[in-house]
Image 1 (tube, rainbow, N blue to C red):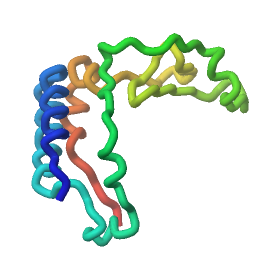
Image 2 (cartoon, one colour; image 1 turned 90 degrees about the horizontal axis):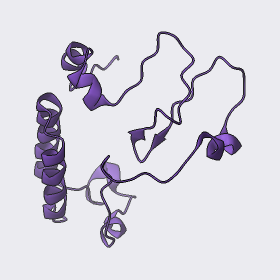
Image 3 (spheres, helix red, strand yellow; image 1 turned 90 degrees about the vertical axis):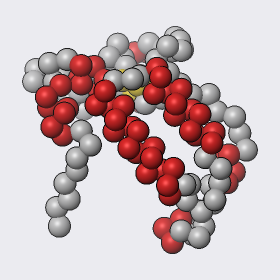
Length: 138
């Protein structure tokens, strides 16, 4: 099994930056589950044809919202935009972070915001009711 101490250190740093109660508790449970099972290896049936060890010979920088984003404008996205009509929404994420200044929300009833903000704001009851729960339809 690959040593997960690196991930534990990064996780603890992340929890210190975002200590929100409900979300932090869900993150903690997920990390505890990860710590028990460890990283998958080719001995795990679902991963037997997927080698991931090369991912761990690099140093990664964890992106946080405190880091500055590159100077990107809507014009930088023109080459990938799908111009079907003027009724669709375009939601932009960079490194997993929602970018409202680059997104185009045209639907009146649609609200898009970061999960942490939703959990602290007027949607906190909805987040509390649904986050960390899943349903499976068979």
